[in-house]
Length: 215
Ligand code: NI
Image (spheres, rainbow, N blue to C red):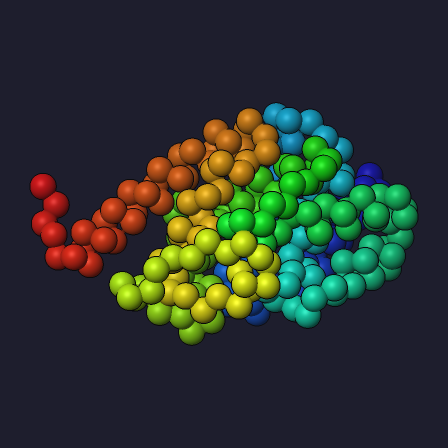
């Protein structure tokens, strides 16, 4: 029962922290990753409490949203009295989850980290992924597309972070790479459908851009 309360309390805290986000990392992103992590964990196993806590806290100190090396997740866990071992495990997962560029490997070690990373990546794919990508691009004042700017495969995290390329490039620099980077079988299965939908979307996008009539 105590664990269930801890999760509910954490969900409330996160909801209030992310209330006003307009970058595509709003509360509903966290909520979807949380639910998806639970579903994947039902098929794949893992410690459900660790999975849920890490899913809820995974973007709290994200480099895209706040200064690097934030301590909000750690502070919250000590405030609600999570035991230090579990807290360490959750912090490791949070560090391992985020995407740092096309050529930069971020392989998670534990099953719990694999699950949360899959869930987070799945939410960047498919219909929701497309919506979030354009929301984030708008938030960063990026163009939708510029034919003069080629996609670029970033081999370091600092290059990836500095990118100001149009949003369509982000599909090639990140989103279309995700299906081959899934950790679990359940994640791979879900990723495939979402991947196909993004490819279809891009096909339509470019046929409209080039004024070709679909036959
Ligand atoms: Ni996320």
